[in-house]
Image (cartoon, rainbow over all chains, first blue to last red; front, side, top):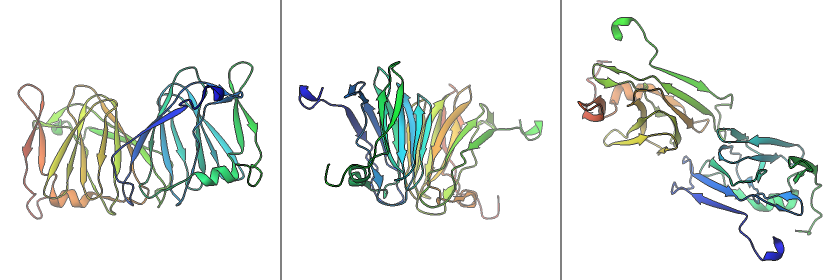
Length: 149
Length: 149
């Protein structure tokens, strides 16, 4: 797929709720199915700039929520109706581990802030690979070398 | 129903997420169908003690979200998949307007705080009555007289 140019791996639709303190904006993300180099399609991932939690709710398809605090990684398998909670201080990335679009609702504090650079610097601890049976397998993935991303 | 003693009109199940700043606790409320004095079953309702929003998501049944800022009331009809947003500074009450249990997910900031006394003092502006056709009708309901509740 990388050779096909710049394919759309995921899309995000956001509410018009202000991203300010006290508000609770929402978004719906759709990750299209597929793998790149054996790794399931995933979102870029981010850490909040403030100590704020976030709530995910699975809507369609199957996927997972990979959370990482810089030392420990926790994987939450997601399906329609599953609630995944991201405590303050944990970076988070979503992964489509199925064959159809994985879609989820996110609710986050308006003053959470999105720090993508944290993930570029610290990684997410693991990559989520498609195993021989098609099931997700978490492969440890060390912190990226300085300047490599 | 009031004569039958103290029937269960609604039930709330809460997450174990701490109710502290930065966290996003969740709850699922089930309002059983029915009316009392022509008024559809509703939750007690509350204002947040801090300026914090809240997100509701309809899960089963049909109902509505009555919000009130002390002057204006806004009604949001709810069905499975509907998102109702309560901006900071608006009291909120949920109502079952159907014939089956109305169930919804709530996501709220851990430091929002629940002020039920505000509603006892200011009311919610309207009552939601069962109309002749069975549909909900909002009837203006003035502020309760001081000391009447």
